[in-house]
Image (cartoon, rainbow, N blue to C red; front, side, top):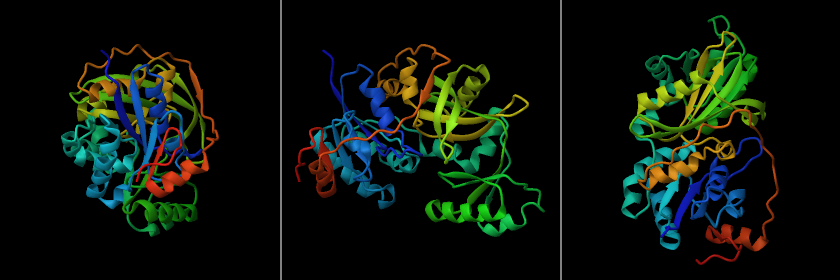
Length: 356
């Protein structure tokens, strides 16, 4: 007899220029053919995924900044109603909290398959220089700074424009003048804190690899794509699947070096010399992860098997030459459903009022 499981998925926002991965993960799970009930977890009443037909119910969580105890108590309350078997966090900013809570959640019967704190630190932007050396890949020179005055004399000190200004956890902006750099520094620091990272720009084409580590050094599967269209924030609006043995080997090397546990995204630039430069490693599925289902290599579905302690499916090689183009759509929401989220932090699939 096939057991129907309930999976909670975070990251339900879907901003057109910078969507979170949660709704795409839910879409992969919904189309996997697995007997699943999907609960969407968001942070704002206007997160569209909370009301999407791809989720059977939606709940609000406190922001990770509220602390581990607040997040755990909310998850425990939701679990009392939904009895979910597993949770898939999809945002960088919440992974540290969920990693800390993994054992406590397991005590409630809620499984996950997450990178450890040590693994998260090793792929942190401030440690990528060391990791790049370990796996034998080039990495653009990067420098942490805590004072925006760096940009006024950067050219004299050998840091020519354009440059990339990055937050310690998230956000990046290419800047072309000192004034633009100072603006970016202040904007990113106000949200993500210090230090800010300054990185030399690598000219070339951007390639991404979405993969899944088994926690023992092996990679269960991977999908690679070349970006074909970007938003103003540099996020992929369109991309085409590729097969490149060098990029695949880079992904495998990173997973093996870190013994990575769970999803990840490797961002790399291929320079004019044809060599790859590591840019970032994101510790979760990317927002374009539905492409994996579209090419027959459904990585979120494979993650479900790992979470439940089952052998992961044998994934076929992804089909190269398949294009994705992101689209924005309106979700029609009865006002009573929105009011329910605002007042109770919960909405059911029917949009009915939630229980207190």
